[in-house]
Image 1 (cartoon, rainbow, N blue to C red):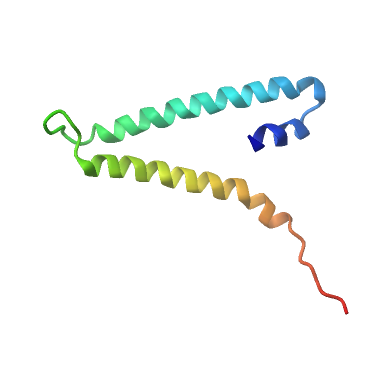
Image 2 (cartoon, helix red, strand yellow):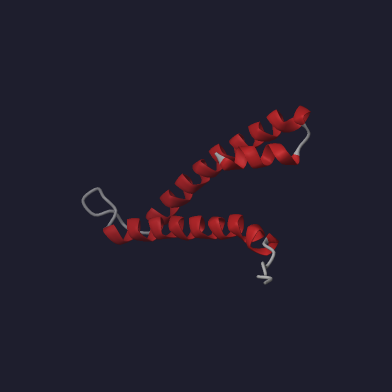
Length: 90
């Protein structure tokens, strides 16, 4: 994953392993939180014949998609501001 390589550049070599371990713990905790929140969203609908209706899943997965898009924008945003305009000199 790109985040592990980027994170290693921000910390001294002695702490890079701990920083990557903390990032890995965050990834696991975030995956747990997303699954839990998906379940909470699904529970807002009443099950029919033992299953939640299709709209419940569509809503829960749409929420996940929105969170991923926000995370992508947050990740890409610093690079957009760091780019220097190039001018053509002739």
